[in-house]
Image 1: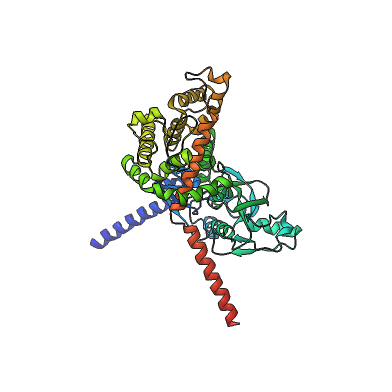
Image 2: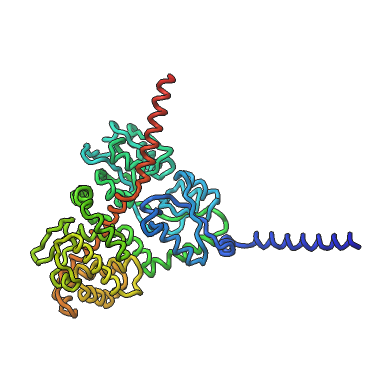
Length: 477
């Protein structure tokens, strides 16, 4: 009897287990992700994709994949493989759900993986160092060292160019990504590399010696990659997601967030800022730190405001009578009970307090970072004129809660046709736009200059190891 009972129970368990296995196998990829609650994503560390910012993780790909995970109602598991090539091989083999790594769509890659709808367009560009002869074309590269990262589309591009330019030669770097190679070009350790235009735009702010020689490719599309499975459920949902964020302008807003201010500073401005960061900022650093603690605002943002206002000169004064590092007006100083606007401690404290007040006035329904950009604009042009621009934005069908839309209408306040329709009238509307974009750039530079530069550390370590290996090989010979 006991034996029959055990046999019956065993049969029931086998049936149940078989049913579970069949259920799992019958689920689509999308259903499996939703059931597990985890979306497994491959990416790379880069200013254009995914990086650690003072406020947590950031980057265009990070923002997009976070929104997609919210769309699915799941959490994200982010994996950063050690090499670019590993990202490609893992997604092609189905070892992750999505590769969101700033991947260029190429014919060769399309044979190994499925690409989602494109979200951005770039060109591949040859990068060289200022102070050296600018190469006019591909034929000009024969005397220099050109390195590109293994597994990137840049290798494919150079292979195609070599067909019509047989003298073209380059080295493939197995260890460094394009960021690392850009650093080596900036330091004069190699002569050239190839980078996508979006990456060149962002990284040149941090490495001002880098210059663009010419495009080496036609415009190309960036997109997420998925495994080439017959199950298209996840791909179909990605298509729905991108259609939605294109229609509601979320994608445009994210592109503006990451690239909208990247070209606001000239080479001269960039270099001058770096000089002043070394020579002037140390005299006032402790005042910015103190104000940061008092008002819970990143000291680097306060310092960026101060630099835009006065270039960190305590005795700065404009033709309109504003004074000090934070360039406070007489009325603002009286309101804040600031006795001496040229006193660095008082000026920085007053400016930080005034900016905090601007932040509190901005509607809570406006999310970051737009809320900060609006607060900065009001610091420069006043809340009344900012509200006029927001009303114009709404009248013209834009989103008054998005800086991307409002910054297009602020300059209209200089035109009689438009400012006569507003409550507060004429304003120099182009100024707050430049003001905000410059501060965003100064802030990014300060973060870069004050955080540990992992790109530089990795690049130099690998370069030294390669030099040691080369010397050892030579000695052994």
